[in-house]
Length: 257
Image (cartoon, rainbow, N blue to C red; front, top):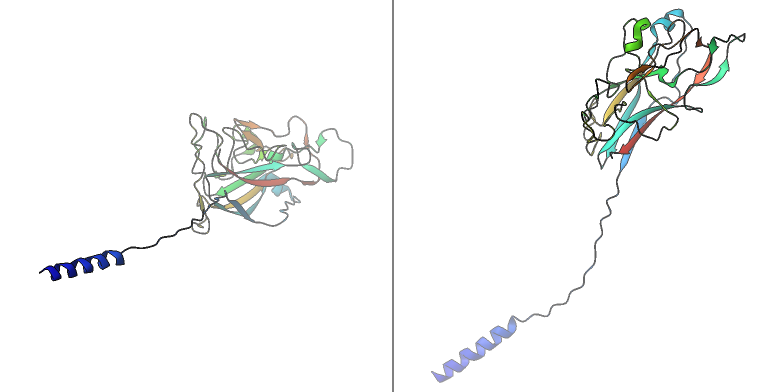
């Protein structure tokens, strides 16, 4: 019995020793840098031309359907707006004049807001302030433009001399809004991409139409601001001087603030 006991003790000793392990370790720090990503893709002609060479076009205007397609991808909440600007920041730049005389009523200062936009796909992340339009999703107005003082500006582009300063409260955004106040949901559109949600009319995909309606005389009766709706059409005896004019339409994508 004593020998058997000693044998079991030895076996137990070796069994315990066989479980001992040597451990060594080294660590490496892994850093993840999540940079905010905002990407705006635009499909459009380099120049969009409106040629008014028929009286009926002055009366009814010219529409360029589906001229611009905007596609958004973002890793953060975002806002998207359109801004009309020029060299002087208030009116179209005249490149050529067709006027033969010095008629004081013929003026070259055509307001930037003469350019109207229509977006396919509404602004889902803002609500109106005092009934003002929050985006460009309203159809182009077809009412008698001679009484347009109450509807001027519904589709007018946001005209500005500082296009990288976002529109204020109540001004139109394609998506999102400015700040947070009563009656405004300014949460911004969510992170996402047209790559996974590329349906026209989704928050990440927009089709833009353009219209210019000079009227007769050419005073651009529907040009106006939208905060509040106020006409900026030519007034009195003034009318637009015949010629070639240019302006820039900028689309700006920015992180929601």
